[in-house]
Amino acid sequence: MSTKEKILDAALTLFAENGYDGTSVEQIATVVGIKAPSLYKHYKGKEDILNALIDSAEARYEEMFGSEKNIGKIPKDREEFIKVTMERISFTMRDPMIRKIRMLLVQEQFRNERISEVTTRHQLDGIQRMFAKIIKGMMDEGIVKNDDPELLAVELTAPAVLQIARSDRQPQYEEECMEYIEKHLQHFCDTYMRHSMG
Amino acid sequence: MSTKEKILDAALTLFAENGYDGTSVEQIATVVGIKAPSLYKHYKGKEDILNALIDSAEARYEEMFGSEKNIGKIPKDREEFIKVTMERISFTMRDPMIRKIRMLLVQEQFRNERISEVTTRHQLDGIQRMFAKIIKGMMDEGIVKNDDPELLAVELTAPAVLQIARSDRQPQYEEECMEYIEKHLQHFCDTYMRHSMG
DNA sequence: TAATATGGCTAATATTTATTAGCGAAATGG
DNA sequence: CCATTTCGCTAATAAATATTAGCCATATTA
View 1 (cartoon, rainbow over the protein chains, first blue to last red):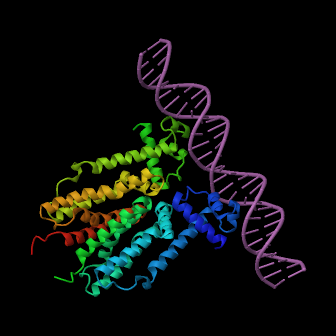
View 2: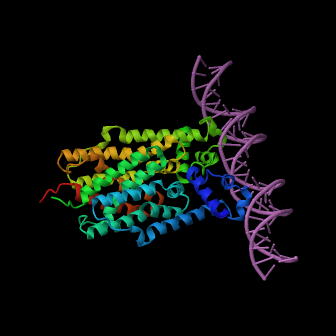
View 3: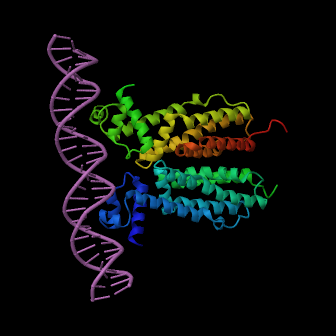
């Protein structure tokens, strides 16, 4: 990992934990293992580092939600849907990098318009568009009752997003959050899926 | 309004806009119309002001969700439910004080455990408990199909909470957010309410 | 009315912080 | 192998910031 990457890495961790204004250039440098002024050989200044982080957040967003590939196979039935969705949510919730990006965005969302936009895309548009496609696929297969896939995607994801946000600020309740999400997911299936026997 | 109150008022506005670390004691004093050192006649320090604000956020929470009174009349039908719920959401979204408290909490939620807890109560528990009671009431009246009121409250409020958060960071889309919420509310009624004619 | 408390002020301080200037070693490239 | 870029360092700076000390007028109270 190059020094330039190490700086981003250290800054992301510190910004996520203490916020942009709560983090000093010196702290970042210390984590990297260099002195603060050396940092300016790689970035123009503190704000430049933040912008680079937002760039990388956007790139990661593209890579996760930009292409059709990441939708994966359309689940065949309720059990598979729940399993695969829980895995996806669990990964999103626990992956350290994604978690830090979330924490950074949520704290700095009011700093400027660009961060506001990226936060909305991360928190709303991206996840919802992805699940809308999955749900659409399951409707076409007759697994899910006909309805507006966009709206169902919101019903499905919104509670999960809020629970993930909760587990970010109260990691001690991570388990509880996952259980909550699973209960909600079961209820979603009860409500919107066709019953194979009846 | 006493100086002590003016300080809280100014600090809330500035913290909401620029964050705690992004706000100086001098800025607060300037808005109040005094010099920075005078501020220490009223509060021990900057953090003391933040704590007082969190106190008042808790108090407001109690006043909104603590008593049974604020639930109001149980709506008689779908139209009344939508009207009264949209009004409630619209108020929550636009009231300047509530909005500032939300913005303060969301930015400072990682600062300490107490703020984490208060944020969770504000964003999840409070609203959901309130709507669970309303929904329970409508179930007892036969307006809403029998189901778990707690879970329905989540389905109902989670998308609204996310849209309100969006309108906080992108006020230019406030209208769009409200439309989105109304669409979601209609869908909620389609899904969970009994149809009076059939 | 005398004594005290309140709440403003100015001046000062100690610390933190972002950033620049400029030096030197090592890597790189013609 | 010389020239140059890269990337670390130390030293310095300028500004911001939270907080304290102590003064004085006004309000409160005994």
